[in-house]
Image (cartoon, rainbow, N blue to C red; front, side, top):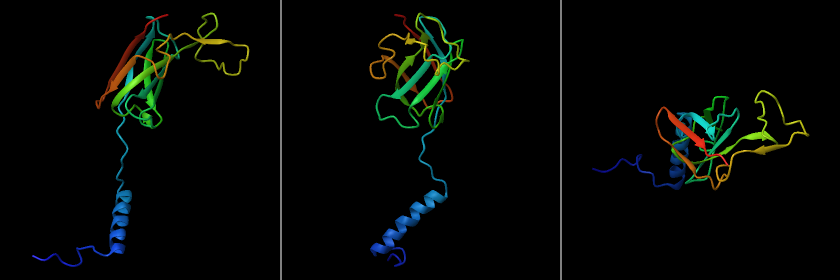
Length: 160
């Protein structure tokens, strides 16, 4: 059986037009290529102790970070963690390197998370998270975000 001539696209202009309208149709119908984000919660402590505003960073191990795979979160006074990416609550599935930061006033005074300390030029701070856990590239802590409704990250950072 012979293919009808209106179904064959041999003319370059018709081919270009067909590709253009196919792309336009995909955009109009809401065809999205954004990956799904999966929630990451949990508890993080430092040498067994919970700290308010202990920061947790997750970066993908096998790819360049993007808005779906660069995560940051902070703990509350009990160590409870909720993490998000730039794209929303959660991260796309994958394996992540985890690093941490916990700033205290020089001498060990824990900074109150309810006060703004950025403008206090007399305040000298130090990060109490030991190497390698405070390093974006050398931290040995990893976590796999799975395509499930709950990913729980529980970690105790060893003390100095």
